[in-house]
Length: 73
Image (tube, rainbow, N blue to C red; front, top):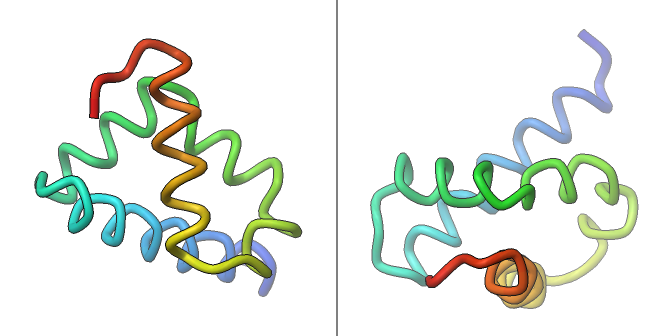
């Protein structure tokens, strides 16, 4: 597995955990929510930019993105 893939996986795990903490849900619930509304694909696609921003900023972005897609967290 390439280092880029490992870095992406680690970053996605970090974002899911931080999102869960912020929204007061379990990490499993956060993962399913982010997956259902396409936010994990967005993170994968834009990893090169997202990992340079703060975790808080990315969580705000993911939350807004999911809400625009019909999410309620």
